[in-house]
Length: 312
Image 1 (tube, rainbow, N blue to C red):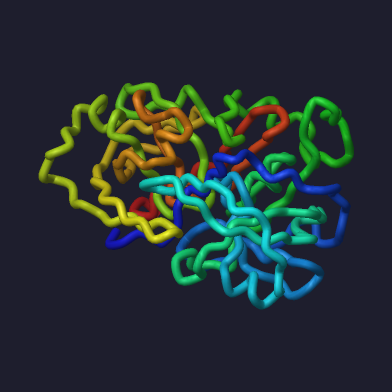
Image 2 (tube, helix red, strand yellow):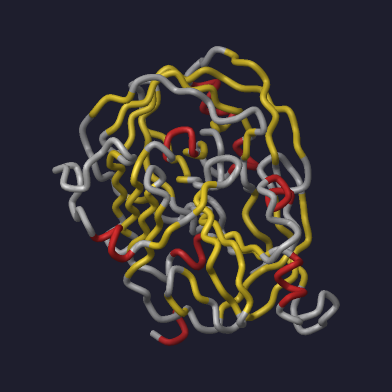
């Protein structure tokens, strides 16, 4: 690792945007894109126009657009919103997006914060104001993504589900965080129980300093290197790199794993600063063949664990 990508968790302190009705459209399983700084991304159609590369960001409360996209689509201004980023909370300008088509769904009337494309390193972030309505299935092996209905009003035997009982059988129960994230309270590393949440928009996985202390690794241990972590609104934060052992997520043992450690502002915003916690980024997610996040039923499943690259 040298320098991490210029993105961060976008968490709206003003709450999730209230979007309009959802309609079924074509292409229910779009292909995931490659080379977006290893993040999970797909093409999304905006206002019935061209397709844009948006990072699927389960750490983002709102869908975010790059300034270049807002200008190209000539989107009208919206109200400013408070955004929690890596080191601080900032008020950002927004635009009103009339229509977004993705994974067979059409969402209308979104209010999207606007960030410089140079910092975002993508056309935008597809946040929880869209994703948290569904059961999100990310097939990393086939590079496909789908969104299906979720919630107490949807029956498991509905034809909308490809595998009605698999997530219930294999998935683990999660809690809902302050901004809608699924938080797994039973992950473990080195014998330490921690809270973990999946951030598909993060390039690397980051633990808080409470986890580093609990592991007895020592904050001043010279064996690891300091890494710069960049946020999409320009923040820079130093993180410490460490290899950990015994990392267990959703009952899967990942073996020796390299993590970064820093007290991100996002941990504080989610009330995960005092006790051991872990942000699970794309580096860990790509160890699995499939990731499923069911927001309506508060369950997550990670299946098809693959060996580390060094072991293949």
